[in-house]
Image (cartoon, rainbow, N blue to C red; front, side, top):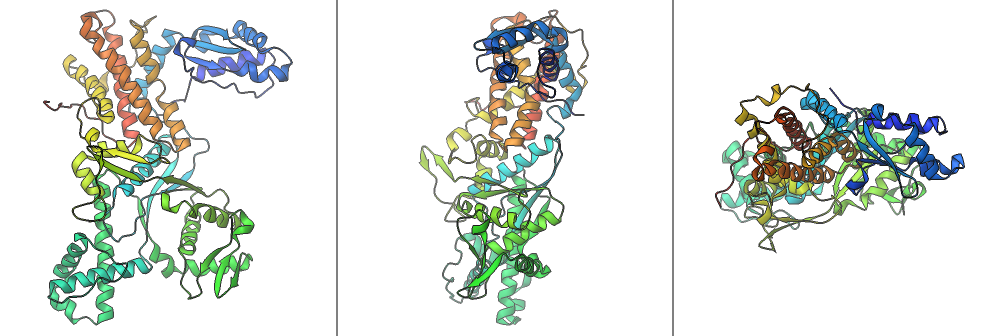
Length: 562
């Protein structure tokens, strides 16, 4: 089941009133939440937008709408004209209670919406070279890519999560040579790691794993070229499997691992060069082959094939994105690190030249600095040069790590505060949300109620018992709108901010019973049944919001003794 986004009844009633006031056919009024809640629950600037078209003062149009709008159909208690002609609406308490009934009826699907049009979307993220463990910047990309994919699914799109395995090129050759050098050390021969090669304990671990799997005798029997190819192939396999394992512990499961090497083996790159040649998009100069991207919006032309005959990264990457289109994806969203920022314009330009102007969208993530006691944590015990994702998840747990990566905009540098991440109090934002969810679950346990069996239908009260209850209910109603907006903006941090704000309102509502026992959710008062339903709506909202970000929603949580 899916539910409508936003105040549908109000929007329809407002559109009808505006039409009666003279608005042109097809005019769709905008609705937004006022920054100051004293101005109402919703506001519209429709009268200001129409003033010029209708040749009337905006306040006069707004006053006319106030007379024409059907309060019952709109589900509003009041409508007022404010400032130069804004319309401020306050929903009736009864309509809010009815909306909460829809929340409970939607259940596990509360927050989902129907995209129009629904697209087949490929979300590619992480895509690390299989030359070592994933580091914390990969973790940020993994959290963002997976959350964006999830939000798009909640918004009604069909999504594939994909990891592009860069298993071809000089870096892979260096990996094989580095692992082979470490292997030679294990049998008493001293071989230097090649310049630009890979260091760290993981290289030795990989060499030992390959030795133990094949056996020293078998390796010794191989011809030098064959043995090096074996080390390269097995090192890529083992490290890619380790990366997948780390992602799995982080709660990220890819639908597809796509091999760069397969592009070479399938002839896709040769076919691309032929297509570019036929389209007149390439030329040769100084022994190199160039793409005419300067004619397509890029700042200059780009090299595809260097003078020594080797490919630049640009060529297979372009072939890979064309393959996405051939597989039927209508949109490809790539999550790239800050070091790839310059690559975006050339890719977009090339795709325009190949008649795919709207295929690619790029999300750039900035770097991560891990802090402990206010100082940067610089190196991993295992990788040597960076903090690995696996080590971070081991220390904080997957939920905390994911949430901390998501709660800031991707395009800003992130300071990952380990001290806050390890704090188990409400000061930790993810625990604040999870505690609020667990509190609602505790209400059902104390009442002997199965949460999924809380009935949606009830005799709807005319009013809320307290302003705190009403604020909670209004916040709950926002979930589908927030998820749809976050999906469209590729901005999971919007959901984080919403969940934290909602949790704050929920905790204030829950704790008011500490001051007045009659305000407790399970107090033996006439409002008890309605409060239980509000608690169920809250629990669904927090749980589904967390799920949409790829996080768990614990039903019980035990605080640290301190």
